Structure formats: C-alpha cells, structure tokens
Image (tube, rainbow, N blue to C red; front, side, top):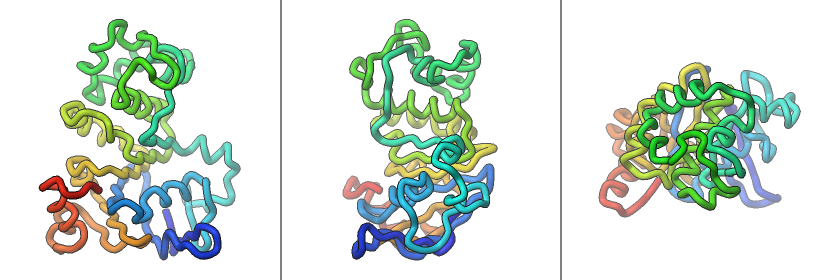
Length: 241
C-alpha cells in the first residue's frame, strides 16, 4: 500500500506525487500510463530501492522502513523485462537449485497452461540453458523468470513488463493460469498488453507522476478519460502503455 507518497530524484525532479492505493492479500492491480508516467518508480519504492520523500510505503501493513533489506526481499518477487538466467537446467533456473520433485515443477507449468511451451524443449525441464539465456529467446527467458517468481511463493508479486517479449499466442494461453496464481498473494502488473490490463480488478492510470484515474476496465472506459484514450490509441497501433 501507499499513503500520500511523493518521491523526488535529487533535489528538484519530482517523480511521484501523492500516490495512494491499497491492496489486500488475494487482490491484484495493473498500472498503466505512457513512458515516464512513474509506473516503475512505484515498484522501485515497494522494493526498497529508494525512499519516499513523504508519505508511507507499507508492506503487509507495516512501514517498509521496519524491514531489513533481506527480510523485504523474502516477501517480494519482482519479475522484470530483462530476466536473469543462470547456467543450468530449466528446472534449476526455476527452483534456484532447490531440491524439488519434477512433478511439482511440471504441475505448476500445467497450471499456467504452458505444457505445450515446455514440450518444445528437447529434454523438457531438464534442458540445459546457458548463462544469460544465450541459447533461448528473450520471451522464453521471461517465462522462466515468471515461473521462478511463482515457485518461490512470495507475498507480493511485482511484474514490470514481465511478458513483453512473449509471443501473443503463448501469452493468451498463460493469462488465465497467471491470474489464478495471484490467489493468496498480492500482485501488481505493469504491462502494455491490453488483454492483461483489462482483466485487472483495479487499474491505476498514471500521468506525470500522479494517479489520475482508478477503477475497473469497464468503469474507466465509461469515464472516457485518459484510460479510454490510451486503449483507443493502442487499438490502432499508435501507442503502448
């Protein structure tokens, strides 16, 4: 949650102004806005990368300043546009070398409707990948990074353009399973893909470092404001969230 949060880079550049939202366990939200609107800065504050100039940043109802960096990381799973891939099997990249039965990892993949995707690899979850994902596509690396975040079951899942390089057909198969995976945790998704954003119970529309609109897809479309304009521009290929 954030209560009246403002954030400034250095002494002059105001990045966020008076940000307010609250999510409970089992709830998720999407954040949209043009480039530079402040979307990623919201996630950076939740991750403790920066400190707010004013207001309160809360994790599990407690001020973020009460957590050590290590304890905060144990509660949050970030999934970024540029995934980290290590040398090892697909399974080892997902579990980070934790001993785990194959069936657990394979069941998670099935729950996300990715069973056809994993079959493309010659040895399935035991296929070797190279450091930095040199022998796989960026989209495949992003899916591995997402599976890793979900496997480790953190309280808060933060996705910042996490599926931007995944092909549309795979993403459409993934969507329903991904949304089911939000149950029991809090998730915040930044995505330029309309199909993902439109399903969010709460959409926060940012502009110039402020939340200008908030509501469901239907509510925001009915307002015919910023969100409705963004969706129209995207539908004709003129703009991305």
